[in-house]
Image (cartoon, rainbow, N blue to C red; front, side, top):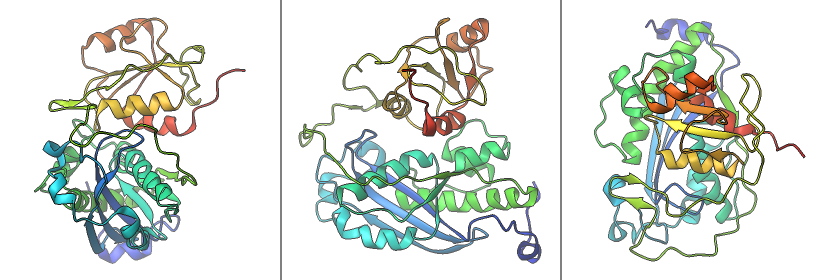
Length: 324
């Protein structure tokens, strides 16, 4: 892949591209609505993706830290860390006037927006860019959509996976060549609007200290049975049209983030998460449509539409209401 060199950047850089970026990674107590940030890192980049500076902080979540085996941050480690309202101003200064860049940006943005809403503040972010979506736009030959695969493609070495500072560094180093490849081809960046939360109502139940029922040492597991979808199934998804509340969505294969998060987002949007594929399934989400899994085989036999994870997360931002 040919990249722009520094001598041609200024003359050929697309004028519609943003003037700066904030590459962000947050580690959290979990993936649900009431989970909290335990650490955050920001790499500020200029218009061409060059690093200007970086910042990292621990955050006291005021609750059980969740999957310590993933992020390595214990209750003892976080006990003396600042609360989110105490770091919100510095965080804002790092984000202000920049496009938020993250790997699966929908997740990072949702966690950040909720923390700001709890603190009765608003994050100064108007647009986000997901590097999963950008890699799809560039047709990068990646085996999956994990950060480690994107890093390996550009020869970036990960040192501490699931450490916010190192993950942000890795993503910043992988984003720059991605950005230059997009600029060279004059590719439209997959920018999405960030809609801040303006109010916050906490869940009535408070998690017990030392207990995180939603997690299991082998990964994310549902902590409760989901209620039935309240909307009727409007039928199959049609390309170039929005998803509609009530559609039955099934997932198959490896995803860049935990399956439970995608399912939670689907349920929150009013979709029906199906555990299997049938003639009633509206859509199958998979990053490997050629895999001979039972779900992909059935989907092809039924003619069920198939989209990848990046496409699905973009569709989730604008789900049409159910027919009245």
